[in-house]
Image (tube, rainbow, N blue to C red):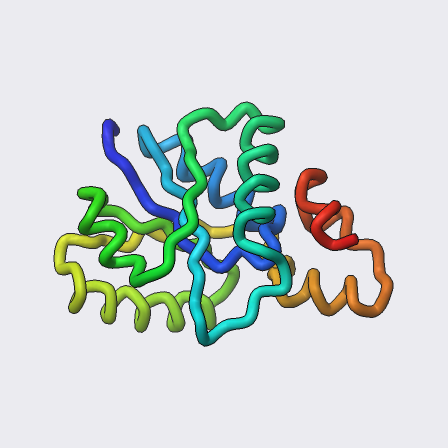
Amino acid sequence: MGKTAIYPGFFDPFTNGHLDIVRKAAEIFEQVDIVIGVNAEKKRSFPAERVAQAITETLTRNGIQNCRVVIWEGLVAEYARLHGIRYMIRGLRNNMDYNYEENIAAVNKLINPELESVYFRSNNIAVSSSMVKELHSYGKDVSGFVPPAILPLLY
């Protein structure tokens, strides 16, 4: 396709569901920028720099070579405009995700009219960062929900 896409997220932590979406996007787009958002309003459980390193290691372990991981403090639509990226990847687990993402897409269009949202269905519909953090807080084994490189962040 010869195009670049952005896959933004908080990724706190990065899950197998996120990896599933990255794999799908990497097959279609020439380049995928995985953008870890930093939002002063949201408290991170894991430092963005460590998450970026773990995602990069995950990409290497999975042989995904056309993705790069960046940390961005600002609006995703502005990142896309600044880098000439016209496609934003989003993962969907269910209709609630779709409704949420459509609202975000509308706001992003106001900021950057060139930005198109591309949705991928997740194969891991029950997996979310919130679920992983909650299970982990109760001492449950979450190794089946996150890539191996992410596990050290949790312990």
